[in-house]
Image (tube, rainbow, N blue to C red; front, side, top):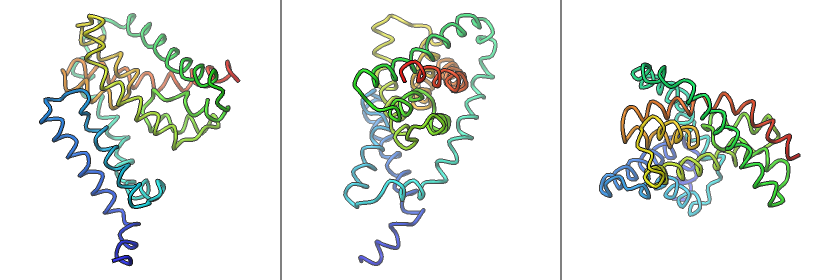
Length: 235
């Protein structure tokens, strides 16, 4: 059994299967819970997989190698978000100026707030660089963190945590702020909570999902310029 586990331990198939099974279970639980914000499929999957890696003593590098196909598909999945944007292009054209202002404010706030809080708590420069792009989708955030001298693997964890938090608080926060326009709610969620937040917005409406995808994409581009500037402010 030990020899069999050692063989399976480094197999792409076992960790790929475990990841898909964990997410499907999380999605099923979310359905049963009526899509309650706290029962987020990604949160459930991360919890299950984290416990599995801990119990089996598996290194993250081994898991990451085993799930390389999923990591590769993040790129095409992100690009596919252009489809709902295309379907709602007429709405986007009507509010280009507000979107531009919201993009600039949100991108700067996300990067500066993360770096400022890290600086105030006495974290090192590599940690500041790690946290600067936390509100950007992982395929973009990890290279930015690496170029700035941060830790890409930790950045990925922060990205996931940020996305899950955004997906959980999206609906209650919008209700609290009395924001009913799906364009505003979607754009803000995509800008702050990237792919996971966009997935949550798509569950609410096509319009919210389209603007969330737009916010995520534009913020990914702008953060490439904002993150180094925010880091320079506090170094």
